[in-house]
Image (tube, rainbow, N blue to C red):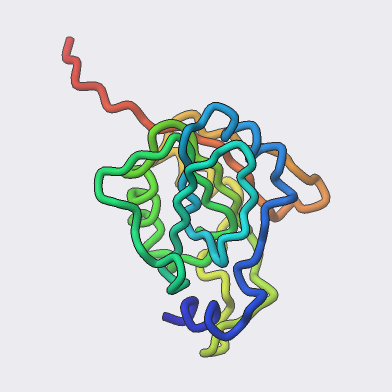
Length: 172
């Protein structure tokens, strides 16, 4: 509710276009026919290689419609989102992302307090954890989790690319 209020009151909130991650975005979207921008804010993320992009953000009325049940996306972008999720809901959000994922997901997560506060005075980053914590948390839900160093001058920023876990039904 507080994040939704922040989106409605501050026009510049959630306006990131992903320019800092252009190389990584282009890399994972190069072979994609569709994409999901999960937690898209104002929907400004530049995804150049994919024409079919579904933008979803439950905190922005313009994009609060969920992706259709059963929809799968070759790639998902979750940029500057997870740190805004309350700790008790992080697993639910990761499971939700996994439900829509077909191939690869790009996560960008901050590990420091935000410069912004919410209406109640609390920090806009709800889950502030270490890079190792996020790495381990993502490994619980996804396969081939790899941290990428995008900008060494921002050591508190985690960029991960992960793939969907394949559940085996084959018994030996």
